[in-house]
Image (cartoon, rainbow over all chains, first blue to last red; front, top):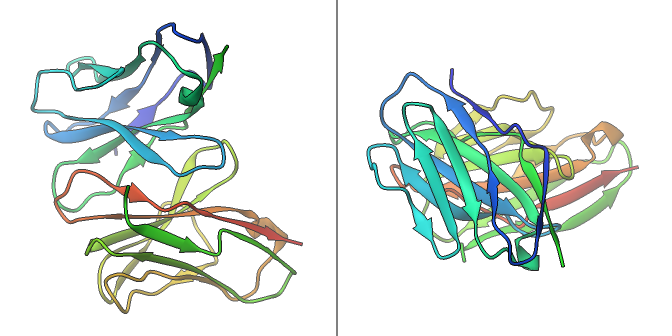
Length: 115
Length: 112
């Protein structure tokens, strides 16, 4: 069975600085999706960025980028120029590529941003 | 923003009451999900549905039940609420084969 591990329960970053959140996963499959979701306090869970395993190029969305290392089964999220609004729980998630298959989530990393 | 809605957003109820948490989406997604999440904690999948008249239990055992009579509607019911049911319940949906799963705003349930 697939598993997702986020080894950092809490992280802190200074406003305008860069922070990297770690995620590792375990799977025997070769084709899958990886996601980072953001859940601000008392607000809706939203997708930050996604990566398709067959694409070697790392996904980027504005200040958010990933470092996808398929062989190492690692999928870290880098947040550049951190803003106060980035403070949230961040969840890493995995899903098989087939139409079936449910998201498998890590336990989350709570990110605090200091002004 | 995703068109997925949950009502009520907050609910305080006494032990033994029957409650139904509503979830609806207007995106025509065939797959829908219910998660249970304590504040600041991990998500636990409790129910999912791959289409009308299809429901399955998730990874976390739950005393709740669900139904899927219409594509857009996926309500969750607790026949007799208990304090142990106090939590946040998140609904989500996805188009079959689609990459992204969208989440509703959640229902915070407090059982006294």
